[in-house]
Image (cartoon, rainbow, N blue to C red):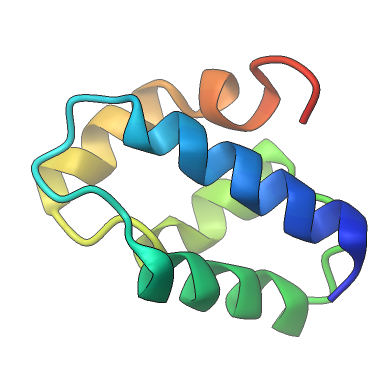
Amino acid sequence: MGESLARDVATAVMRLRELDLAKLPGVAETIDWANALAFLGAERLDPVLAADTLGAVVKDHEDEDLVTAKLADVVGGGDV
């Protein structure tokens, strides 16, 4: 996994942890998400890839709905 993808994932997870989620993503979920993205050949995290792999990092169905609604902020809400 490249450094850019690792930074993108770390930043996105930090933003996810700022949301009012029932189950905040931990280290295991972060690693799962990064591995899923790397497996798909991602070099950077973008909204499409994030949406396609969200189940790796967000485990609660209601949390997934909330994150999906705010995905642009989570993935692109600044210097991702």
